Image (cartoon, rainbow, N blue to C red; front, side, top):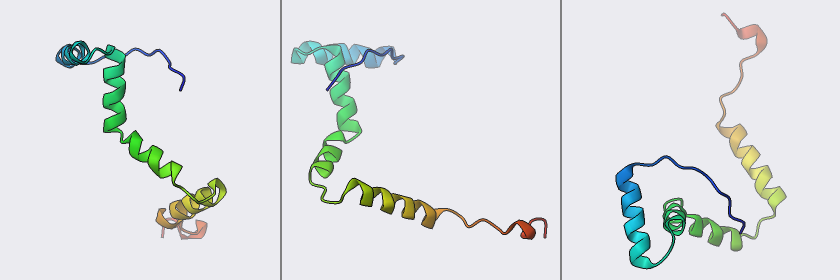
Length: 83
């Protein structure tokens, strides 16, 4: 997967612990942060779900739209306003 450069503003203590973890494990600061984000965002679980998915992308999109419509409040008829 391609890597991109970004700038973060994080707490000094957090950065200190990132650097300590990186030094203890022999990896870069970036690798520590990326691994932490992947774990916290549960990206491994998503990858596994997507790998085992049998539904087509079109069907999944159709179900997602249906779910959105089912959970949105119904609009009132234009004549019903202000009554």
